[in-house]
Length: 122
Image 1 (tube, rainbow, N blue to C red):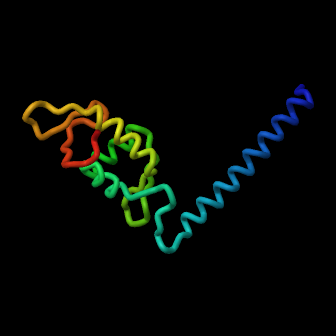
Image 2: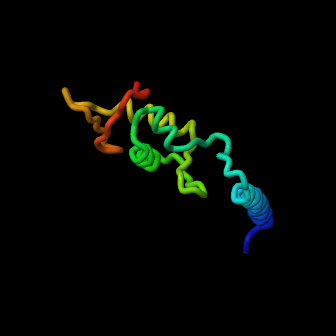
């Protein structure tokens, strides 16, 4: 048997979680019904973020996936990512990347070998 105190505590937790799930369902439905294909606040196109750092879109996708940055695909097949978290991850990873003397390629264990043209590495 479960005590009434524990039961009330569990009941309150279930009620709070149910309310949060309902809020998230409303939010997801609003995003799905978005007719104008607008990008949500705090998100940006992955190709734009990659261009800021001078890396390819594919390497930006690998960086985002390996660092835990939220990626989502738009209806037209383009990736969007959380802007702030991507900037933090890119600065950390690209500043730790090594470049052999005389080579055009950079190397980092998390994303492998890549080219960086300009960008904000450090």
